[in-house]
Structures are given as structure tokens and as C-alpha cells.
Image (cartoon, helix red, strand yellow):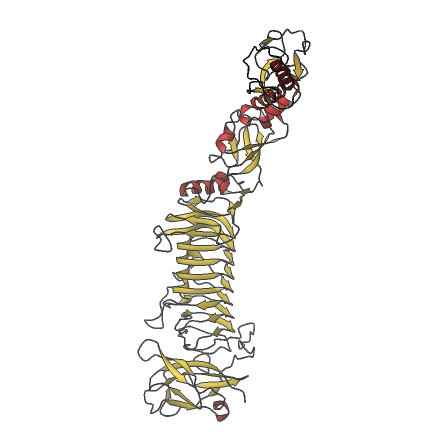
Length: 637
């Protein structure tokens, strides 16, 4: 700030102006502020301000490399540099007037040049890889690229590490020389501009569809190509394909290797097939922790009509999987050692068709909302179910076709039906139990242990067997129409049959039990007591009631506080609803308010009736051909 501020024009010789000019000159030269006002009030940059501005300009504009030092190089800017024989960079000093031409006498040519140090190197490191600088200048550095196209445009040396940061295809890899294996989808091998190629770092027996562009955001066609490519890039011995989200495919897949499809959970990861025909043709396939499902084209059905999940030339095994929304899950006449663990089979028309019953097993699986589960054409089995459940089906669980006969095991399986009940186990052979029969099972041995049925009116088994073995078989809804058809049927000693001679047609029963060849004792599911000879006491019929044509005697037993009672009786000539009287010591322990189901069969079709068990056992209505079987907990004294 000046003292006098006369305002006299430039050129004034007034001593006051000369005094102010001296103060202004001192500030402009030695002051630290970027600018000062002259004696007329106009702001002027100080020497310090000009130095700061110049330094900022140099820093922002970067250095321009003119080449190696030699005579005759014209320098027109303070940001231009030359390089000496030792690799050091030099620029002209701020005191050197421009333009300046190098003499070649040697740097620094007196005081004309000053050393830049590593400033130029820092600038080159900050440039893009595509410029040939950047991370290219650092041995062992990882280069980051955002897309496959960007990687293909680079010319990189062998051994350079490159990270692909694409949201779907992300991953690390290394540049190699030579000819890469074929990879049209560019998921594992990508050829660079200089002929070298990038190879993804990975386990040799693992691929992921997302490497090849497969994702929930991709098209169905792109996903089909991606999954197939993931298979193709595995070794000839096979390996694992990891899928961490639900991706839709419209085309078929051909798996010619041993393949593991691996997800992270059965509901949130897997493959969804939107087409028709066969989705996966496979050799040996294992599916873990994911779903493979079909899809309805319009959302009104569970699946595309004609869609087939798998056609297998060898075997399929699953664990923690879900196979849902198919017209047919597996259609293959061959196959062996199919094994399914903790797997959901849901919403399908046909589960397994044309199956060769050769050691097929289901462990803790759930099958629900289907028409038919298994139809087999050959093989001696066994087909085995261990635990799990079968629920909500419209037709049948298992059928042997064309005379096929297999060993079938059901152990600890829960069966429940909430839609139109048809059958549990059957096949396409001639039925011999009337027009209402579903069919007969062509098995050699059927084992049913520890299972439960919870559906009124559900047929249990119709068919012929060489032997039936069962224990702890609980039907927890009384009055169901579960029965065996008789011709040729033989049962192990200790079973409950239609007469005391333990032979002939078996009709309605509460429990089927058998000691079997290994002397398995049938036990009550609640008490654990042996009940293989129940009921054992004949019950005298009265009031005109008679035993019906089946020869099934009306009998009862009491074991550990439970009354077991069954019989087939005819009330055509009865004069009262009361058909029998229980001993007083039993009658006094029965809840007289309870009614139990019975089966009325005189109309040609099974219909429900009611039976009351108290001191006077009675049937509601004077009806003919009544079949009943009840187990009644008695009240303790």
C-alpha cells in the first residue's frame, strides 16, 4: 500500500510519487504476497506470485520428452526435457531465454539446464497402459483393465500380471506366449494385440459361467453359450462348474465329461431352462447346493410342456439340490447308481421315465406337487427311499412298466396327499382287485419300515409280491382304503392278514407287520411292544350282524393300554346298529364320545362310514360289507 496516493499520471516527478514508487518496487521484488497494488491502485503480480504461477503451470502441464541429448535440439518450453546417457532428465532453467538450441557441449551447458530428477518418471507412471507406459514400466506390477476389449488391444510382455475388473468376468491372469487353447467366449484365454495371450488364474478343474459372460443380467442365449463354454474348458476328465446366482438358459447343454454343478444354495443359485426338449445331456453328473429348474413361458404353468431336465448316459447324483418345474425330470433307459441326498423334487408331471432300476436311492428327499414320480422299464433294483417325504401328488409314486419287477424299499418315509388321491405303489400289469384298482406292482420284495401315511382314502399298495416285509408301519388316519390284492400274494409269518391262517387276500388293516426271514418283530410305534400277533381275541357278533364273505373275523386285543380292533362284517340282516359287546373291563375305559372311520364297500366303491367303540360297538346305519380297523388308547383307572 502506498503512502501519498497523489493520483498523478505516469511520468510524474513529484517527490511524493517517487516515494510511493520505491515502496511498490520493494513489494513487487521482495514481498511474499502473490500481488500488490501500484501507486495508481492497480494490482500487479509480485515476483513471488509469478514464481508460484509458473511452478503450478509446470506441474499441471507435465513434461514433454524431446529425445536424447545432442546438439541442435530446439527447446521452446520450460516443460520440455532431454535425457542424458545415464538416463537422467534435464530441462532448461528459468533464467534461460527461450527458444534455446542445445550446443552438444555437455549438460548442463553451463547453467542453461537443471536436472529434473524423477519428475518425468512419475509422469510416465501416471499414464495409461495403452500408451505403453504406466504399469508397463514397473517390473512385476499388476495391470488393471476394465474389459475384454481393452485387454485385447494391449501389447504386453510375457509374465505381466493383468487384473480384469469387468463386473461379471473379473479375475486375475498372466500373459503368456504361444497359441492358446480354443476359447471363443474368451473366459479363460484372451489373445493380445502383439500375439501373446492372457490366461486366467484358476484351479485347473474349476470353471465359472460368469468368466464367459454368463450372469443374471445376460441374455438366455449368452448364458447357454457361457455354461457350455465352462464345460468345454474343463479337462477331459471333467471337473466342477461353479454357479453363484440364478441364470436362465434357452438352449440345450451337452456334458460329455464327469461334471459337478456346484452352487451356494438350492434356492438362490442354479440354472433355469426356458426352452423345451432336453436341457442337459450328461455322462456322469453331480449337482450340489443349487437348483436346476424349468420355466413356464407365460407364467401360468409350472413348466414348459415337453421340457426334459436330463437325459443321462450314465448316472446322476445330487446333494442339497432342487430339481423343479419340469414336464419330465429324467428320461433315460439306462443309468445306474442314481443317488439323491436331501434333494427337493417339486412341480413336475413325470419324475423319472424309462428308468433302469439299478441301485437307485433317495435319502432324506422331498417329492411334492407332481403327477408321477418313477416309472421303470427294467432292472432288478433296488429302488430305495430312506426318510424324507412324498406329498401332494395326483397319480402315483412308483410304477414298473412292461412287466418290470424290482426290489423296492421304503424306510421311514412320510406320505401325505392333499390332492386327488390315486395310488402309492403300482405298475402297469393287469389289476386283479376290481375296476377301481390303480394296477399292481411287479416287485419281488417290498420292504416298508417305520413309515407313516397321513391321507384318508389313499391307496397304499395294490399288487403281487413274493414277499412283503414291514415293521412299525403307522397309518395315522384311521379308515384309509389301503389294501393288498390277493392272487399269488404270500406274506411272512407274523403278518396280519384276512384270516387266522395268514394267507389269502389282504383287505383293510391298521398295521401290516412281519417278522420276515430275519425274524424282525413288529412293534407298536408308540409303545415299542411286539404286536405281530394282534388282534388275537374273537369278538362275538350280535343283533343279526355276520362276518362278510371275505372271512375276516372280528377280533380285538389290548396291549399296554391300547385297544386294537378290526373286522369285516355284514349288517344286511342286522336289527340294530350294535354289532358286538366288549368285556366290561375294557368298555369302561373307552371314551364314549369318539367315533372312528369305517369303510363301506357294498356299493362297489369305498365310502366312509362311522364306527363307535364303547361298551356296545356299533356302526352308524345298517350297512353291508363294513371293513374297519382301529387302535384306541384306553383311559387308565
